[in-house]
Image 1 (tube, rainbow, N blue to C red):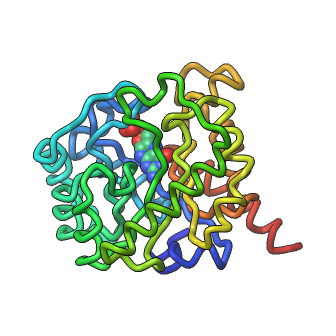
Image 2 (cartoon, rainbow, N blue to C red; image 1 turned 60 degrees about the vertical axis):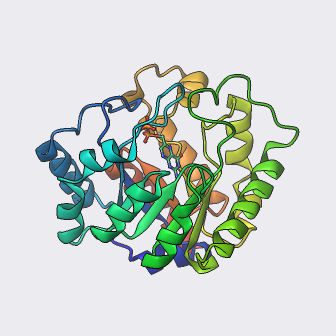
Length: 279
Ligand code: HH2
């Protein structure tokens, strides 16, 4: 699909979908932990995802799965330093999935173009200045609590409205710290401090989030709510459910999809976009 960063940032207006392929260089990610720790395996996976149509590769060196512990900035840099510069130098658009300004700074200096911060700048507010200094795009995600405890009885009165208010507040915080509004992406954070009902309400209410006027990213790939609905205990068996979630998000105006299974998602989005274009 090969979008540029500007295509991705303008996608809220153009409606053109883009796919962010996930590369977890972690020992403990929920669906692919350990699989891509060896640099040769990581590079091979990136090549595969790019050939399958990924527009951007999101590299993460810290798992945020429910119950996970933290990885220090030094540990995260040690995990990405042998692969991220080579991937960026090969002309692949790279996003760094981190909440650390130190890791973001390393990645942006090595050629990454997007900072994907699941804490939306709350863990380490200096991340905004780092993104601003490099002219990077930033994805701000909603999470209730912290990964270690976030699935322990999350409560909302109106999940869609509360997530929207949170994202608007974090957009303001980013702008005050120097990140231009035109470089911000927002994400409701599927599975981050949410019950099944909360995830479903957010996927059904994506249009309320796109009303913020910023591109919306959906990360539902292989997540546990798919098992809760359809009985798919093995995360690699959740591709159809992941695609259903992407298409629901796309129908609501979301345009960026963070996924493990690139080829299948690209095909589904191409068909959905072609149907939209013929309306
Ligand atoms: N989900 C995960 C990680 N990063 N970033 C954004 N913007 N949105 C998401 O929904 C999101 C994210 C969790 O998924 P995964 O990377 O597959 O697993 P882990 O956190 O265990 O590495």
